[in-house]
Length: 339
Ligand SMILES: Nc1ncnc2c1ncn2[C@@H]1O[C@H](COP(=O)(O)OP(=O)(O)OP(=O)(O)O)[C@@H](O)[C@H]1O
Ligand SMILES: [Mg+2]
Image (cartoon, rainbow, N blue to C red):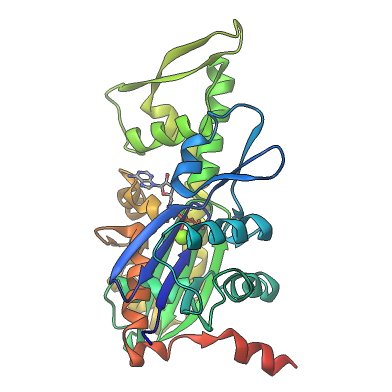
């Protein structure tokens, strides 16, 4: 019987799955839409489309928060729906899942439980720290490297990982990602213009403007509601406002990067100073971001071509290589060891 082998990067914004049998990667937004009776009416990309557009009797839920599972029931429902709705998934498969390192054992355990006790009924679950999966996805020789600094900027978290000789030396998870950025944009626009926009509009605006130091006075027209008149209308928002909204969050990331570098032993620090930082995650595509980090840290910044797929690309290599599988560990063994 053919083995079903999967690599999963369960992101707060989007789930990325590698299916070894089909040799494909597929993604779905990590979202569920349900009606007032709690009946699921859509999941994934389809549910995301409903976000902020639905009538009040439909609720759109994001079952993960800041990199961890915050709503076990809804994420189980989401997985079940994907499993039974023709998504390439089979029961009893062997799973390797990338998880943030800087989470509690209980939070890590939830990832395991999700795959074993949901409809997925995983036969085995191996875990790998996301920073390690990223480094593999970047094509780095993780097992023999002397110092790699990976910054994964995602939908709700920024994960900083320092690796050497196949293992994590330091890791830190910051509650900074696209969602927190969009919240700042919504808030600033409300304060400055008495104009209310949704999170999806803020995301579109952020994707359009990036964080370039744009002195040309460029503006982008967005839809929202004038809070003084209550009328839905359009407004031109300067690109500089987006940059200003993101300033504090970006500075927080840069400070954390610098603090972590300061803590690294001199021999690793030396390599990082020479090689620079590797930036992955969906936010790495935001225009101007790699340049901003380069200017703020003074370090080279490398990005991959499709940074949001970097971890799952790493998982693809890991599940296909017995040598790289040595980087993973089994949650079952961990559990047994505690008994
Ligand atoms: N071209 C782009 N410009 C700006 N932002 C982008 C772009 N493409 C994707 N993003 C942002 O990337 C984020 C999603 O990244 P990613 O898929 O890595 O997150 P995730 O893995 O689901 O979340 P997390 O790792 O925080 O749990 C979203 O906030 C999205 O708006
Ligand atoms: Mg992620």
